[in-house]
Image 1 (spheres, rainbow, N blue to C red):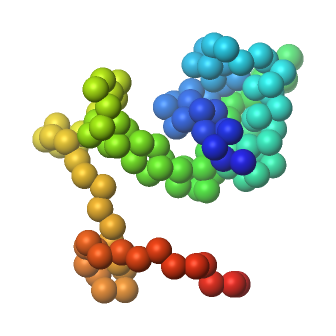
Image 2 (image 1 turned 135 degrees about the horizontal axis):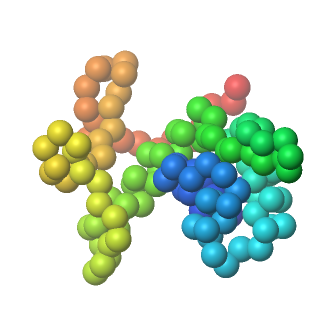
Length: 125
């Protein structure tokens, strides 16, 4: 599901909140498809809609906690692009000093940064 909806989430992460603002960032999508995708994202719990005008009805969209958690995924793509693409259109910087950042893994149990990770099957809940 999320792979097909990532552009919509990205637009909201970038600060676009209304239907028209999101549509402007996705020029090739029709209005009815965008409406359908936004409804699906809301059903999936990634966004919520808030009515800001009742005549005609207009909504603002914001990410839920689950949707905001995707920000790290998008940042990872940018970091990958900086490293591997000839031309990358975005860069992630430390706001305080304007230097490039790196993505790291942290183990809250050990309270330390992790270099040696392993991918294991998820446990059943």
